[in-house]
Length: 317
Image (cartoon, rainbow, N blue to C red; front, side, top):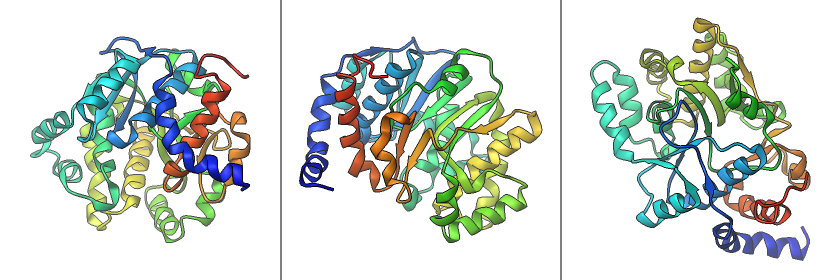
């Protein structure tokens, strides 16, 4: 990296929040609705979320209903900013998930435990398994993480949102990453994949998921979480992959719902194995910035797309 690139990389985190504030508000469809986009966010990711949702609206040309679930850290100022930038946005408080959990405690004890217990390595991701699908009013949902930037129209998601496609979609790691970077985690995932007759675990990523609420029955969720406790994996990041994977596979098996992974060379996940993909961002549909790349590259790449689109007002395609 040259000196100019190094300087831009280090000033971008300070510049990005100010620039995204100057983008025009977007207007989502009213809530509640039968179809919509859901994201769980906290105070730290408000500006990332605004970039994600505005880039999605801009490149998709759609204005679906939008819902965010507060992880408990959103401030009053954060909520005001969200409502000012995304009109008709619906914000679900953390307490909503806690209240619903009390009603499930007796009949779905493992779902309750996984949601309520503290899992130091999972931040609040353990609550996403229930909250992202069950709390919003949407029957047909798209879950999109805040740390994603869109660079081109997401045609598969557009068709899914506007049509009657019964398929459920999920984001996936490149096979090269799954083969080399997961280490013992991949071995464990592969063992469970064989036990559960699943092709999903080694490459599953929950950055983007398209599905139907009615397919995720409480009993199905309970049966997906129960084995995690049996094998003592409830505090590991692997538990999330296994739970989501088993859910998708069970739904596919018992309801004959097709499931497909979004093409990883277009819906890209930035990993240590693929830093070169940042040199051709506009050829991608989107990028998911995970781990250390969330803070390191998201602000800089967000500024790049904001500049190219003139703050989401002009197409470069």
